[in-house]
Image (cartoon, rainbow, N blue to C red; front, side):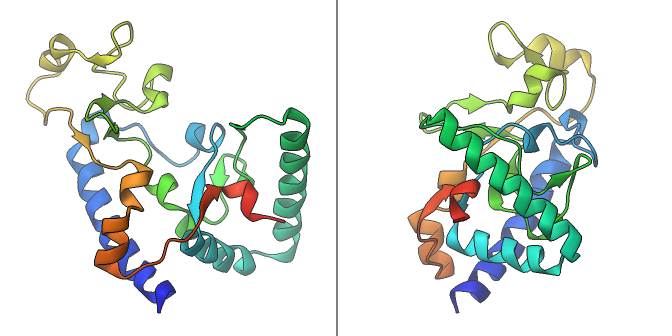
Length: 194
């Protein structure tokens, strides 16, 4: 039942996120092959997210499964060498700048790229904005906030907005209760693999 409820939630979330991204189209540079967000993260995953990811993994050709597992092994070895609490790595499912399990990806993968509302209620631009991508056309890099002057120069387009798309909110207790999901443990993707 938990997995079916997660799929129901995911359909709901996909619809919401689609609307957010559509509303923010003048600021979004995400496109197939960019993959900056897939090369620089911890990728938090909950149990149902990982379960869905594994469904996608098992559908991959055996040769690609072996490549993913080899990549996971290398990432885990590197993590052990660094022995840092926060370990940033490239997603093991990224090949040729494309996700090989795209339809089965996690919530963090689906929601990244929008301006998020952080825990203090402030807006936080995605890191790719500082690399000339999403929201770069309205971001003041020095102040790290949206520039009204840059926005006004773009003409008659929807204003840049922040959304409550933080991972901890999208997998919160209230969401879990509303959709009858047990998210269980949440940990970096690489830590789900033994």
